[in-house]
Length: 223
Ligand SMILES: Nc1ncnc2c1ncn2[C@@H]1O[C@H](COP(=O)(O)OP(=O)(O)OP(=O)(O)O)[C@@H](O)[C@H]1O
Ligand SMILES: [Mg+2]
Image (cartoon, rainbow, N blue to C red; front, side):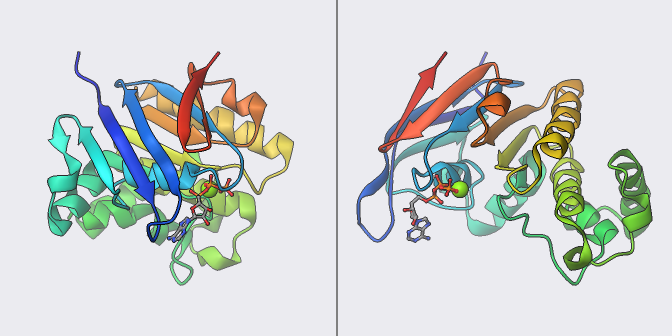
């Protein structure tokens, strides 16, 4: 079986300063559940941004399902990302002037689904994520946990094969973060999606079958 993701000898530095990622080799199979921990500033978000094709790297190769991501032109890359990758960002990045429903259905509209069909699918997600009564509220007025759920729904609505989650429960209390996380993981397993998630919470990290630690530029597997 081919790997879904294959990163080889990835080096990343910003402004030619120290190598945040120093020769990273990382392979992921379809339906893998992978956690990444590591100190603040160790490069976890930088690595997810590369995997999500949101950022480039200094050297190395990145193949996604045998596509050479580095060779994609900007327009192709946007299409590739919209189709294949759902990203739950560390700071959500919802569009503040848009309502919950509008934020959630954005990926469908970008992939050219009609507004009517997008809204219909959006409603099933609002229901599943218990956001029905928040659907017309602008996202900057939502609570942290509600924003979190909108952000997860938006990442999942296009049924991407890969979901990247960057400290998705970072701003929630322990009870809520575990509840949301359990719900999220169950959905990922049901859909046989692949998940790579970054967390500072060891208990959550241990839920993953495959665990990595990023430190001093190196990504090491641990048990
Ligand atoms: N666009 C950028 N330009 C310059 N330096 C950057 C840029 N983005 C990140 N960095 C630096 O790269 C390092 C790694 O940042 P990154 O956000 O990947 O860390 P992280 O492991 O996600 O940290 P945290 O746990 O705090 O979220 C940091 O020292 C950061 O200041
Ligand atoms: Mg980060």
